Image (cartoon, rainbow, N blue to C red; front, side, top):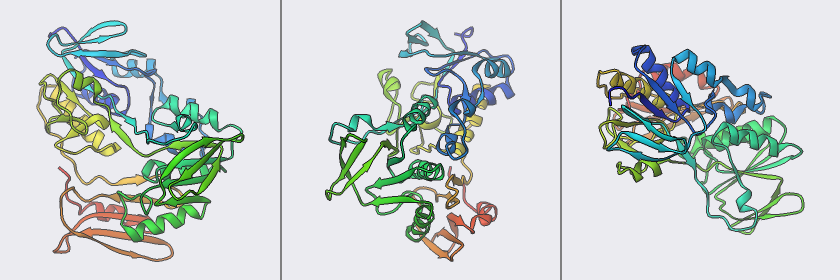
Length: 382
């Protein structure tokens, strides 16, 4: 298969980053990027803060497909649906025919989780996972004033802040007792909540939405306690599930995501996985910094130097101008406790082990300038 290209399946941040990093190391190896999308490059994190900035879906595209292909000297084949990976023959079976590969990089991302909700309006709930989803969301927003968001995690809170900043009435529902429940300790989460409430976001926490019914004006959400909230549009941001259907069908090992080792190799030595779909030594980290670390390591491996991915401290910036926030989660499995302090201007939380060594942090509002100093003493993730 030496004449076949390295094929990257997926044109999001992960797939494009692998192509960029590989080109820095090898200017000649043939690279084919196959995608079900248009192949234009945009930054997916920007989808959750474009409204208040008055950026249209078209303005979010930073590099059109043709320009990206020319820039990286790769071939990009858009709007292709792959039905099967034939691992023995080293080929993809797609709606356009057979595509051979030398090495295959799976950068197929993740799909939105859909909650099991009753009611004739449940099927109308929108999710925003790609630029096309966002374009449809923007179109649906026209003439609307009231939006409900399911999920008070990072993406839900970013969209809530963005919608409120653009003048919409926003209600956020979550079964958790606080926003950013997986990232912030209790007092910091309360500070964060107050910041978003100050710009008009209404939180319904500890609330499970059980029904969404259509009304003449829009939708009625009914929670487990029977409370009714009427809105014009409903969006779900309860999380993503790594896309594993195609690799599982091919016999590759998957758990939460596609299982890979520290070199991003799957259970087939000629197939790799990167980004939101990859479970790297038990971790699925759907954030920009770990994806970039994966892309750099994988590019070296594909260029002939097997390289294990290493994760330094990776602060996550939450794009909520109403309460600027950065979180550096402690590495999984390490014991310790949060030490929290705050005043009217900001909140600071440091996760420490029994000896007082800092392992993670969260900074909100006026505490944000401490980010660089704290990040410099954080332990590596992997």
